[in-house]
Image 1 (tube, rainbow over the protein chains, first blue to last red):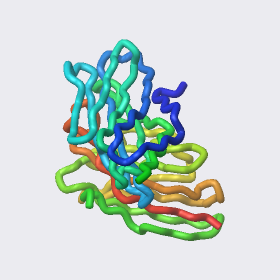
Image 2 (image 1 turned 90 degrees about the horizontal axis):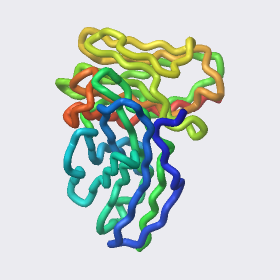
Image 3 (image 1 turned 135 degrees about the horizontal axis):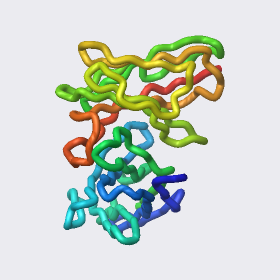
Image 4 (image 1 turned 180 degrees about the horizontal axis):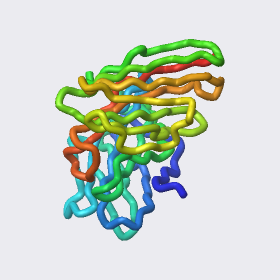
Length: 115
Length: 117
């Protein structure tokens, strides 16, 4: 079963506007971590933001914020004030429990920022 | 520069051949992960090493093998290559071998793009 679901294959956003990328996850473990990565056309994977399942507040890192809704098992990424350089593929990932070693990734969402 | 070094960046080879991909983790990181990214399969976890020992195996084919050396660099060996092995292979590293702490983020290298003709 898919552990991470990203339902939006592609999105367009106007420069300077905000965009929300959806991510839902599936786990029965009460302890888990959620990560977002950015992959520009050059190919590298860039870490953006992290949210732990026990964190009381939603994570923020500059223009990135994570809308964490635990009961709904969703961890949406919000990019505010979009810039042309934000055009990339964005991946949501999860690591379960203290005993899990790997990150499981979603299929990704392509974001294109228009001038 | 993420601090994780992967070589080669690009590799073109023929079916049936064998290749070795190399990864040097970020300074201070003991754990190395290998991932395969293809259009049809997405990002797939292959294998993880921590301080020289194998920690976890994912969807790694028997034709593939890996190891982590005492200096912590890692190599992924791909043999009897098939057309379907064409993909972007990522190495990532982290401080610890597991855990959900935000401090234990995986840092990725730039990837090695393998094309099998």
